[in-house]
Image 1: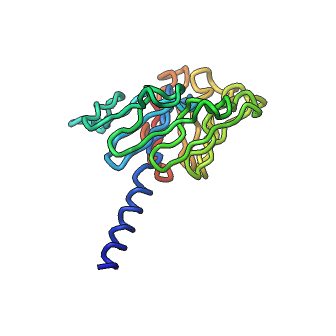
Image 2 (image 1 turned 90 degrees about the vertical axis):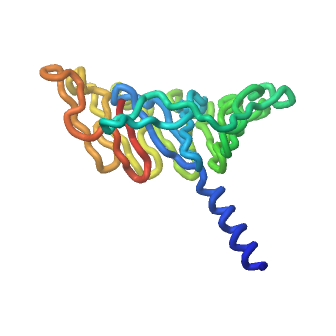
Length: 224
């Protein structure tokens, strides 16, 4: 009997640990980080900005005829709770849980660059660049669990200045300001996957090679 309860406890613990994960990274216009999405154990996506604000949550809808996902998430029909009037004023009224996923926020006593921002998504701890960092970095996500997010500094080519440079071991590069005007600043590669774009002489910036939706290192990267 003791072995049975030990096995059950281990199962519940591992379920909790792996119940939330970084699911998607989405770029708008194929160039700028739009939002980062976490996937919960109920297959709910929670989309947040790079400065830690929740913008949407729900489930993806796949078209019946084409391999196309609707840009807007379908409403989550499960339980959603919010922090009440007894909570710290900086996160009072914010989302407390979505289904089984509990969310916490940095309180009013934290560093200025963190106050009110998302602190945890389930078991994942989020951290941010401090006010002492380069101006293009401060306030942006720095850690998602043990994954570090790096950005291009203010001293590099203006076409990718301040943009996401890497997530964990996955580097991200962009076309420079010396490229065609419809290509500069767009994603050039994510990890080992390369992207090419049509120039102003043809389809004016449309994706020429590479997939709009690509699984790279266990994370879905989406170019909208």
